[in-house]
Amino acid sequence: MHFDAYVGMSITHPNEMDSIWKIDHSNARKGVWWWWFWLFFLDNPKNPEKPLQLMVLWSTKKDRGMECNDMSVHLDKPFLQLERGQLGLGAIACWFFDGKEMKENFLLDQGPLLLEPATKRLVSLTKQKGTFQHRGKRMDVWLEKEGVNMHFSMPLVGPGSKPDVRHNRFFKKFEYRILKLSRLPCRASFKMNGKKQLLKGTAYFQNVHVTRPVIPWVWSIVHFRDGSTLSYMAPRLGSSLVKEDLFGLESKANVVVRKHLEFFHRPTQTMHWFRSFRVNAVRGKHGPVWRVTAKNAEGTLEIGLASYARALWKLGKRRKWLPFKTELLYNEYAVVVQRFRFRMRKKELTLRDVGEGVGNAEHSWGFLV
Picture (spheres, rainbow, N blue to C red):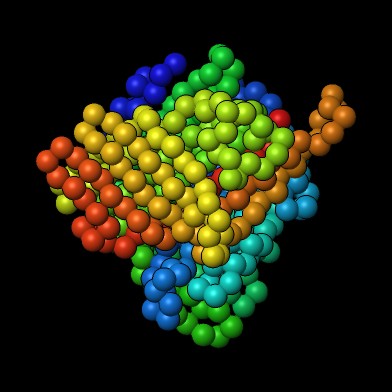
């Protein structure tokens, strides 16, 4: 199946957002996974070259359990239909780059998750609490733990606030559905150890429903100062299933299942699609530097993403019919745009045109069944 089969599937009906508050176990096979994922990019006045970043994830799986960073997550209690919502077991995980250091397990807790479609709210009923709510034309996230209170507020404005839905199926069994909001303005309030801080920036959201197994991938989302966005995705099969091949992403030992890159130029309201691109990594001062080159009928695009912080999520699963534990190592790198150039027939865009860029680049290896 070619990428053309789904690349244009962008659903913007307002009711489409309601799907993120639904969990349907009736036709779900064992291993099906649901998650709600936010990325926040916040200005860092003290060190503009290293913006603050925070990722928060609520997740549940139709399975007995798994491990996350050596924490055992028990998932054998299915979601039960309550009067106003559904209650089940899951986990909340959050890493936070505070401008100086990466705090990988900033939040990491497992326990009951309450999903309330009526109030459009998702809550982790754990000691480390996280709440996500969609109210009218605004979305809010609250995070709480001892000595820390955080609030992120995102108005649903601009092209990036329209839900973009991708859905596909492989070999009649493996399926995924992703709903994403590519870019939202964000205001954040932090209260930590008695001190309060107000910040602003941008946010990215995705709600994912995927069947097992989960295979390795490279992915990135970038937000530019002028409102433009860029993202790419490339799942891979091959040597990346058994070893980390960070500096050999284009190795012949891997087969790219499907790849796509999209660049939305906000000033002209134009989306540029690329099916042909390459991703390579070289060693940089604070981590890998990702070099991406893409081509389409319009021209060529080049971007360089320099890492300045890294978070690792190690996911593990044991199966009775396997003599070993399957593991997926999920690396997330906070990045800034080092270089950008888009050469078209009659025009050229550079980093000076789109402005500074901040984002996140993912690289995973291993597999989970």
